[in-house]
Length: 458
Image (cartoon, rainbow, N blue to C red):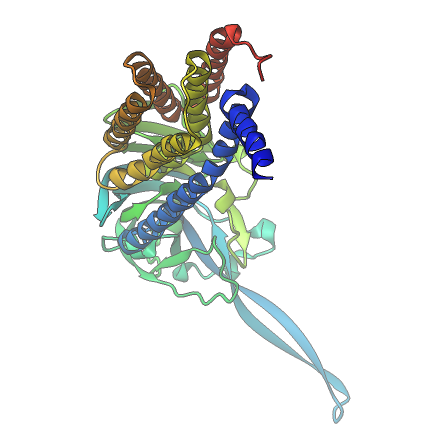
């Protein structure tokens, strides 16, 4: 029986060595096997990216979070009267009792103008960093005398001597100056108005409230001009809500990669973005947004109408590494294809173990990339990892193929492939287009090279 099995085993081994179909199946199987370490590498990149997000959130929380300013809003107290009747059994008459309650009307300014200057920088903790800024926001505008008769409120019920101004913000912790507002010729300091809200949600804003406005010129002149300045330490974005009947915003910063967000975009004619920063101007009139200038009893949540600028990191190191790792299957597959074509056309035998070593070397590129990029910039990490892997595979190919021509071709092919992938990673708008064209060219080259192979000998 030993003599019977031995020829069958030799025949099977010979088929593995000489059959194109067998080699294709073997190479395909190894590519699938190498998807396992690639998946672990992707998980590692995700884990490190989440760790970075945690560190960035911690830095931002201590420095200052996003900046949203909702105000100033004139808070007008007014009296409401209610009558209750009680029947008196003794006198057989009804006793009428009048109760007076204080409610509030909230009046938005006639015009609101804001000039914002933001100076950005990076804060580091270990291998991670976060982009933060310090912004100086200068607000000017004017209130007109409230006319509340249309709301059913009589002039004599308004308590003009108890007017206040409130400002709501998302970043109370980040304020770095003593807050006060100048109304006409008088200055009023702000204090935190703790408003216990059991239904706190993401859009909840903290509130600052001024003292009583004692400047009676407001009532006489029918108009009150105001001015106040807020200095914030913040991160992520700067936004305001356009509560003025006419609202303008001018923003300048040294941040080179702004993303304009919210319901309103800046004027294209005046917008400037350079490598040294940006400048943008907005103008919003009351007809552009769907809310009123006056509200009774409560201030509405108008966060959805906010607009401003996000201080955006275009593509951070982990995003680039993750995008690079997504091409791992392509790199391994094309590299194995090059070796397969060389093996088929030159009749040089390459053992499956040697394919496996080449595949593992290709996967090592991504671990090198992630680890080096945490201590350097992505470009330097990419080329260090790429050159290391290309040199390693080229020298290994030299020991396998016993010639200089094929290893040199493999080294040049890998260099072109890694360069191609790096270009795609850097592109934003044209990544899909360039990638599709590149893959089409690669397919055309493979078809051209493999046209003379006798596939019938399988």
